[in-house]
Length: 182
Figure (cartoon, helix red, strand yellow):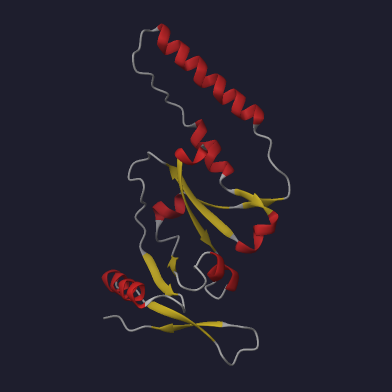
């Protein structure tokens, strides 16, 4: 289970007008979107890489066999030395997991996704401090959550917008309307 080794966050370079993103990841417009300046958030930017899209599956059999053999050899070595606690000081599995988590089938390429991945036990996990630029609230967001998002935006002193359909648009456009912070 690779998920035990990493923490991942998905980001996109799609703008907030992306209907599929609001439908799939914004809980059918009832969720929210947070915008980040990746240059200003060094910790977030340093572990964020673009997802690679491909039609081919990767065969990692050789890689995993080598890793399993390394772990087995190290356990044997430390056992012979009489160690009661086995310590594996090897980050290879984290790097493999991080690499694999950044590969998706090409049918998902419309997402233009980036993923921030870190080791699950890295210092400061499970959170990376990152200051948001602005919050976008989905048009179907319940008032309780909207109120909480407004409070969060106020505490960070950042703008907050509510998404709405542009009723005059011929392209199903979404517009972001400014919300007053309380």
